Image (cartoon, rainbow, N blue to C red):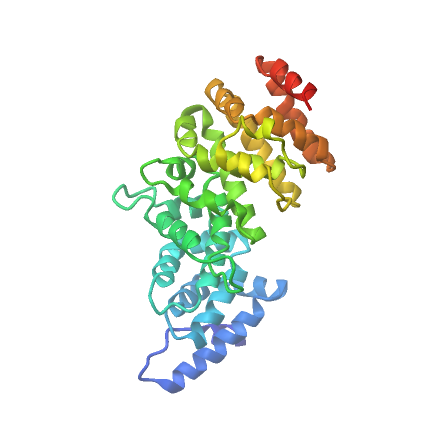
Length: 344
């Protein structure tokens, strides 16, 4: 004999527009399921019926708001469990979410993006979003998401694509993801890096986390990184430049966009994690000889020196010191940095 939970799950089957009474039952059922996903006990109970619950909720994502919204919320909650997230990926949930996300009538954008964040924490989920198995469409989903991430405004209270930055961090943990983002023909990194000065902390964290991950490919992809130098160096150096206004003597040795920004009052980057990620990204670039030359050409050592003097956070100071040690060990910078220091 079916239990109450089994009967409830049975009502999740896709409703027919010709059966309004059945639609009402489905709406009640999905609301109850959403409620169950809000507790550990409820999640455990539903997990036993994952093979029925997950496909049913997935089908409801394309329905009207009354059922699509609670279904999406339930899936976001369920996907926090790595085993259930893995089952969702196997069911093709990435494709389902992307298909619904880019329908003109989509009204659950933020929830679908959050679902993709959870699913791409798994290697299989990232691979699915990258579409690594099909050369014809490889990277199409990511291109769409980056375009949406860059087109939507962060000034609005409603920023449904702000979590895309977290998706990009997830996929850039895989080499295939880093190569896609660094592909100069696609220009994805160039598009997203311009969000580095967003007012949204979530967007900033996404940009810097992704940029840092991409810099792990510096040995083989340095040229593609340096192709976007006009955005790369301001993004990496402004957060770690300290609070002082730089002298004309300092800024005259920098690119115009960087020197101008450092010669006027600016908002400090208060998030320590972002400053650390910027320093780690610079470190990975400076490991390469060409990267070091590019760094010196923008007066990078002087910026790091001033930023270190202003820094108070021990963990961030450690990242500065690691970078400073590398610059000294690599040779050719210690004398330059010291001479600049004595001029101040």
